[in-house]
Length: 350
Image 1 (cartoon, one colour):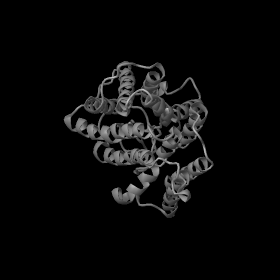
Image 2 (tube, helix red, strand yellow):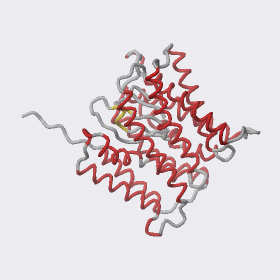
Image 3 (cartoon, rainbow, N blue to C red):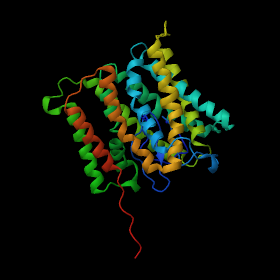
Image 4 (cartoon, rainbow, N blue to C red):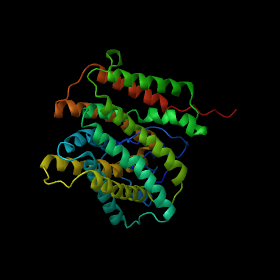
């Protein structure tokens, strides 16, 4: 969840966690894909991390697979969480335990949170766009749609980013190939929804909420890029601060629109804790390491595994129904998303 959270922000590549922030591509200034729990933000390398400590106990491919599974299962965890808690409370638990996980990392590293009223003001807007709104919208959406469909809707985030880049980022004008990817991606969405059948059997409101959640991410990335790029602070510190602000926002929303839970059922409670601590907290740390070790281009590929895992988890664990158009449409969406991320080849000097 995906993926799905502010880093040292020049966000440009997909962030997997459905609520995360983008992975800044240090060489290209563009806003692109999703990735999330798309949550958080990714920098090219964790600040303050000595090069000697970059060596990992596990091969990067193993960590890549683990990250894909964690973020892919995020939509299942949301679904289970909403069985006992209102959507606002699921989103609150997610950012709360995610923030606690990152604060623990900061404590171990002895890194401070961001400073300055201006920075915290921008983090407040970033938290609303990248955490509070999308996390809540996905939770509301999964009251009426399968977790697998929510995961596929999350994969449309790079398509929305591509569409927004046409008007929001003048230096990121689309090529013909990327424009074709945009059209192909939305054709995939129509396939998933069964447009030729009049969208029968699909909950329109829930699907619209999930697509709106996916749209929040590129809007948030554009905002972060324009306001927080170059702000002092490590990715962990910026993301931790952002999740703290989102926790406050969702605490207020929960207090206003829900009542305190009277019981804490085991599996829904564990799901919310795992969703936050693993999917929105520690998984970002794993992603930082991958970006540092293999680069943002390879690390961002986790985005394209999320809907596959989300669909598989929904079918095998929750017994959700799967019709032929769902996996076919998902593949079309991912193909379109991949095309929107292509860049023109650099011209060779004469």
